[in-house]
Length: 396
Image 1 (cartoon, rainbow, N blue to C red):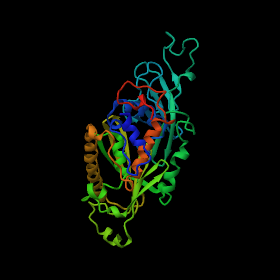
Image 2: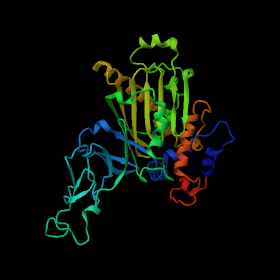
Image 3: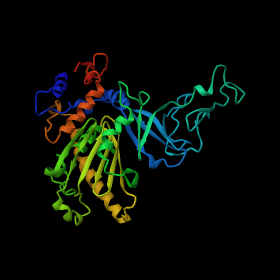
Image 4: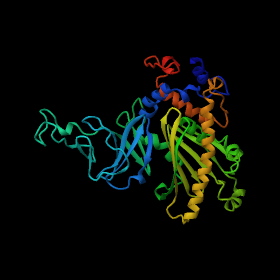
């Protein structure tokens, strides 16, 4: 199996292999990703418009661990480990509003919206307010993680303080390449108009990301839901901002206006930030953002939020047509991604297949970022894993 991984890293072949199959099927590799990809990088976790009021909370799972988001009393988004400091009970079980305080249901420890411990009743004995000797409330608040909101999109980074370090980028550097790509859009003027919850899909999270990034499949998989010829597409590679675009020729614009609303036939960009932020832009003023959250090795939860310019007069019927279009497009992608996952259990898939050097170069870069995140020094000798399929048992 180490040979399969080395095949991926070979630089002398113009037609390169994809990632070996075990990175999509191995529970041990998924655990490695939890400790690297989803811990050291900024991970997209939610939508600010879903937490509009002070005290709104939302539980999330990142890297297999429980966290929660809260809009605090400074009207800022914050993120904490979703664990009471007393007996480590999961505090927030469902989305809602907690008021001004977060109260543990087990022994009634109480925290404010900044995460500070305000009360630990009877912890020291019969006196409700007297703590044990040496126990200070201010030393036992909730454990925060770095949290940033960019427009409607919330990101957290588990490791570090959010600044540049060996494990990841400062947030301004992380967001910079996407900001540059979206300079022509006034994001402050967009509003969410619809959400589509696709539930849990039977595929590894990387399959969904890779499928979105590359344009090669569009005219084949989406031949009835889109009208975007392959020849009009191009790929995008800029640091950790990857994707593709489609410029519909000017002479087709009149036809676009008359096009069937059940078909996508407009100039578009399909952009990602590694590891899991996905945004699509569609002329004249539509955006779509996917939230892909790994559930386990072979399952991923997905939602899509559709945005329009705040002055767009779209009727409810037109918004419903958008929902129907995107549900149909996603279903086509989901069917492919789930079949890609099924194919990875075959020995034929061991070396990852092949990538088009023209149409799938952005997929290749995404896969390289996975490897670079897992092996930041290019060396696995200091790590260990019991699973025979884990690359941590080898130097790569």
